[in-house]
Every structure is written in C-alpha cells, then in structure tokens.
Image (tube, rainbow, N blue to C red; front, side, top):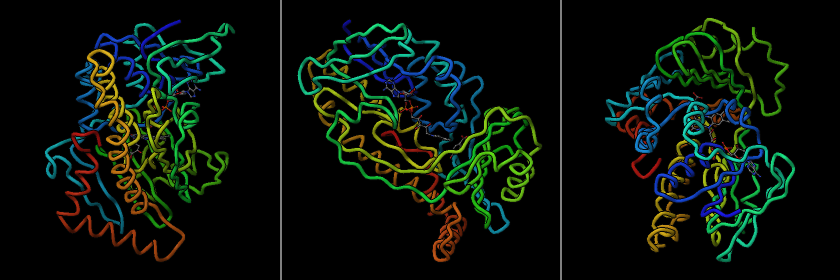
Amino acid sequence: MRTQIAVVGAGPAGLLLAHLLRLEGLDAVVLETRRREHVLGRIRAGVLEPGTVDVLREAGLGARLDRVGLEHRGFSLRFDGAEHRIGLTELTGKSITVYGQQEVVRDLLDAAEPEPWFGVSDVALHDVTTDRPSVTFTDADGTARTLHCEVIAGCDGFHGVSRNAVPVSTCERAFPYSWLGILAKTPPAHHELIYAHHERGFALHSMRSPELTRLYLQVAPDEQLDEWPEDRIWAELALRLGTACEPGPLVEKGITSMRAFVAEPMRHGRLFLAGDAAHIVPPTGAKGLNLAVADVALLSKALTSWLLHGRDSEALSYSDTRLRATWRAERFSTEMTEMLHRSADPFDQRLSLARLRRVASSRAAATALAQDYVGSSEGT
Ligand code: FAD
Ligand code: DHB
C-alpha cells in the first residue's frame, strides 16, 4: 500500500490532519488501534477556543458546531464563598464555544473519506530519517500490511508508539491530585462554567448541552472510583461549587490523573508528532484539544507547501514553532492548576488564595488570564 501521509491515530489530531490534507489534494491514510465505536464514545474535552472554531469552520466542519455549540462570553471563579465573573468577551473581545470533543470527532468521522483503518495492531514505524519511510501493521482481519509513504504523522496520543521513534528529551510533572469526572443527564445548574476553589478541593461545573452537565472534582491521586457512589459525588459537588446540581443519571464516570509532559523535538526526519503524542497539559486550562488542533493546522500547511510546492521552510520550523506555543500553554495550564486546586501544603494554600484574589481585584490580572484562556491567533 502507498499514500503520501501515513497518519497514526484517529483522535482529533489525526482525523483533522487527514481532513485538512485531503482538502489540499494530498492523500492520507489513518491507522487506529481502537474500534470506531470506542473512538466515538470517548468523552473528554469540551471547550473550544475561537482559533479552533475558525479552523473547523474553514475546513467545512462548522455546520453542527454552529447549530448546537454553546457560545460562552465568560466564566465564574468561586472562592472565599463568593463569585467573581471573568468576562472573556468584555476583557478580550472573544468568546469560547462549549462543544464536546466527541462531537468534533463525530463530525470528522462523518467527513472522513476514506474511513480510517480501525482495529489495527502491531503498528511500527520504519526508516523515518530516509526518503522512504513506512508503517507496518496488522489489519483488523489479521493481515500483515506495509504502508509506504512520504511522511508519517504521529498523532497517536500519550500512549502511542510514534514518540518512541524520535530521540526526544522529555520534561514531565505529575500533580498530586486527580480529577473525578462525570457526565450526567441533568440541566446545567448555571449558564456558564464555574471553576471553584474550596478548602475540600477544586470543583468544575461545565456542560455539553441544555440537558447534559459535565462536572469534575479534585480527588487524591490514588482514589478509587468505587469510593465515590453517586450520592457522595452530588453532595461533594454542591459543597464545593456552592450550587446544588439536580442529580441525574450518569452517562460517564471516570478518574483522570493530572500531568504535564513535553517531548522535544516534535519532528525527526520525515516523522512529525502532533497533539498528545508530543505534549500533555493539565486539563484545568482546557488547552489539550486546542493545542492538538493548532498543531495539525500548522502541520497541514507545512506539508502542503513541502510536498506540493517544494517549499520546506515551514516543515523545518514546525517543531520550534509548536514547542513555543506548547510551553505557553504549559505555563498557563500549570498556573491555573496551582491557583485552583487545594494543596496539602499551607504555604501553597495561601498562595492559591493570593493568586485568586489578585485575579478578582485587578482588571489587568483578569485580562491576562482571559487572554490566555481564549488563546492567541497562533494557536493557544
Ligand atoms: P488522542 O485523543 O489521545 O488520540 C490518539 C489516538 O491514537 C487514539 O484514538 C488512540 O486510540 C490512537 N492510538 C494510540 N496508540 C496507537 C497506535 N500504536 N497506533 C494507532 N493508533 C493509536 N482539552 C481541551 O482542549 N479542553 C478541555 O476542556 C479538555 N478537557 C479534558 C478533560 C479530560 C478528562 C481529559 C482526559 C482530557 C481533556 N482535554 C481537554 C485534553 C484532550 O482531550 C486531548 O488533548 C486530546 O484528546 C488530544 O487529541 P489527540 O488526537 O492528540 O490524542
Ligand atoms: C471542561 C474541561 C476542562 O478541562 C475545562 O477546563 C473546562 C471544561 C469540560 O470537559 O467541559
């Protein structure tokens, strides 16, 4: 088999990259270890920056997003028993869109022509520093195959194999807490997102639609899901958010560890890394999906210039450009995480409150936070 770009991974990064490349007239094949239903059912991010929405609209993927996406012009910070609204539109002129990652993935799969190869195994990358790289894999029927290509895009997330083919240096930080997340069939308790700092821990109120609420609680890193029966979750949310949600049936319940991770460089020969394969941000700043989209928006342009027009400057600078944006997002996501979570350390506890009070009392500090939250035109 032969293609121009072999894309490893059918998460939002891989699917969007293949879509953007095909719009430019390039040929791309996507390989995915999981089944289609699994990819479609994965509930994760929910906040799209305006830059991400622009990329999706320009790629012809805006119809459902514009119909059911929820435009938010601000969010609430709650601490010290009081509410402080961060007016994103008032402070930056921009707004965010609440639209689930699984909806983005659904739109991308609806538009995918051809479909990814789902259910593949034994994926291995070869000869990435030569002009003739390839990917070997076993297809869902058990047939061993080789995909010859000009470029490989490693979009296979944090647990993928692509990063192993790059001599990367890595930086990592594990945070001393996890998030317990639920998606519940109940109307949101507030019309905007609420980020709550409480002495019992952080809580986040978000949503997916007027009928679906997404909620998160800071829990200990080794917390077991069965220690959190539904009654306990709803009671804890009400305490920390200061607003009671109407309990409803759970569509999903899971625990996510909090880590920051960056692999440098993001290119090795003809292998390019994008999205979570190259970097993880702690979720508090809602940057992960947006970074992945910005990576592949640049990568599709760079590969188009290189493979169709023989200009390789953007491909050569891809890693440096995206690592600068990655570190901007790591800085912001780490600050949001440390400001909003409850630490066991008394000094950190006072620091969190001092940071929150500054954002609540200084327009300059609130504006800086709002600008980081909505992202820059270079892709967060
Ligand atoms: P992934 O979505 O991980 O996709 C990688 C794909 O590669 C997967 O389908 C995987 O099955 C496949 N794969 C793995 N190994 C192989 C292999 N060997 N061969 C082929 N395929 C392979 N981000 C935000 O921007 N905003 C938010 O509000 C937000 N909230 C979040 C909340 C939670 C609870 C979590 C967990 C994450 C959140 N994120 C958020 C982060 C966001 O979900 C990720 O950054 C995003 O999924 C990255 O997309 P990706 O395509 O790079 O990776
Ligand atoms: C959501 C997730 C986040 O990490 C965040 O900061 C805001 C919203 C969400 O899943 O809706």
